[in-house]
Image 1: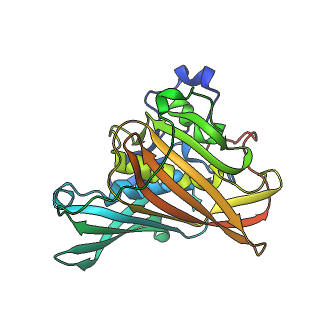
Image 2: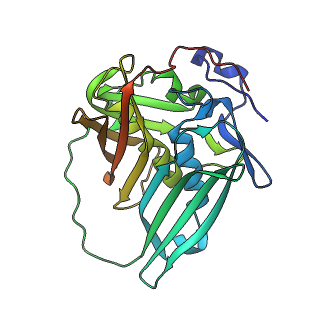
Length: 280
């Protein structure tokens, strides 16, 4: 399986395109080097975990009649950088709503789960969330943090703030890579990947002094996103007691499509942003 590590964009042409997070072999999902956590190179980052669970949550038959209204991920400590398996179970099978759980395992040990709430599609009134975000075409592309570039497949247009600048951050993001090799990810899967970025793009502290790894991800969808560019408006708050919350707003060029939160674990530490990692 692939052992690709994150590299400078100037070297991206030496790697397979499009880059990918996982390669599927039967029931196993083998992680590439691009999945490694910026906090611990022996672990898989929350974004690839969330995106893989989102792949497991999709159901073409169900999605024709039910809309995904909430996607909620719980991460049970560090997800080891090793092959993972997924299993899905039904928690509620109602006429108006359905609740499923997607479980992620390393060997036989559960390492993460996602609860997926679906609500029956109906024609109902529209009350849009007001916003004044600039269009992505009005913002120049810039390099994002190395751990979030996916070897050049994730592009960023920074509105203000963002990674490396404590405080509220607003950025447009696009993703041209694959979560599972050989399969183009849906906009739902991309949205669940970017939902992990809030604690980094809207951090309260400097990563060299205080870690802000997320423990969970919650996204409440008003609708599914459209287009290639996804806006993330993120801000983290802390009370000085070892944890905090990242508040996230998600938009596309048509407006706000979701809102979300992350629970953030705060401790003295540093990111592995510039620390070489030995391939597995």
